[in-house]
Image 1: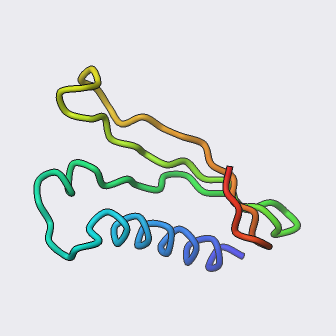
Image 2: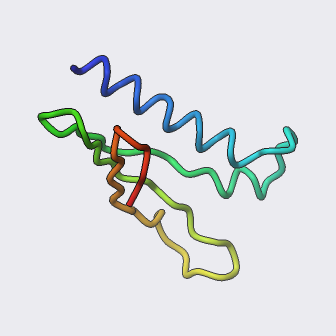
Length: 82
């Protein structure tokens, strides 16, 4: 169960990095926009995964500070996220 959770966290992190730089070229704006998966937990029946997503603040738009933290729930059966 722990290995499955770690693998899911790895793939979520990899997906966010790949989605950030679709053209393959990294710029400071790409680095600034990288989101990171924090805590992750799977429901006892394995049908849902809850995780926190660190979302960086936008330079020049948002106030300075730490990343925003969003709680997300992923349905493992159909991949829908809320």
